[in-house]
Image (tube, rainbow, N blue to C red):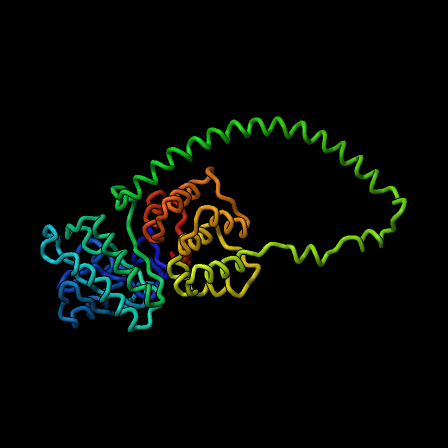
Length: 352
């Protein structure tokens, strides 16, 4: 892993391979198929002619030509006939066979469109579920960065119970917290105005006291009195140390942990090797979900990285709900975060 859902034009993705939702002739068509052929140039059509078509659920590979991607993997999705004609198995095969071709051609990154969810009529939410399941199963055993590219903000997830429950939790906690914080900020502004005046007086007094010589101690004696070694020893463990300790305590391997967290192996290696590593907040949450931490454990891990769990952040509210309800599927959580236009858990490289 990682796996990320992005809004983008697939023809502009700077990855090793993009996947074309093709028709069985492989000779171009509308939608994503037509856009890829247009961006790649006529050379792509010439190579496709030599492939002599492709069966539903199968995949074939060509060069990318004028595309940023090195390869185009062409796969033919099923037409939706109500779900009684092996549509799910065929759609899952599209993802599996495309990923296998990418693996065989040493691809480290690949971008998929939503296969069959357009003109072929596959229900969008079910198509998304098949895509996520197939990609997740592959990434549990292989290292590759996978993007699922969608246009706009089509409601792939809003019908799901998790999304509805999270939205209700946000409504109950996020909005009311902001109202309360607005009134608190007004009070704090008035309080700080008085506090600053008092602080100026305290600083004057403190400066006067510090300037006066100590009656019974020299400067050297004061320095000796402070046990710096003891203070350093008492410093709390950092995020990296805490994470590695939790992995051991939960009986997990490093690989299991970073894959469940949707975190790239290279990032995990940095965290492991650098005791001072400072992660982003979504990355901390990703590990909390992967390790199935309780809310108190999550708060503690966030604190190690210099963060706190707060209702003033919509991301925090969503993750608080998921962890409180012991919902620990990072990819399904990311579906909800994507729909809410929030940062996704885990990490990935930047794409065009």
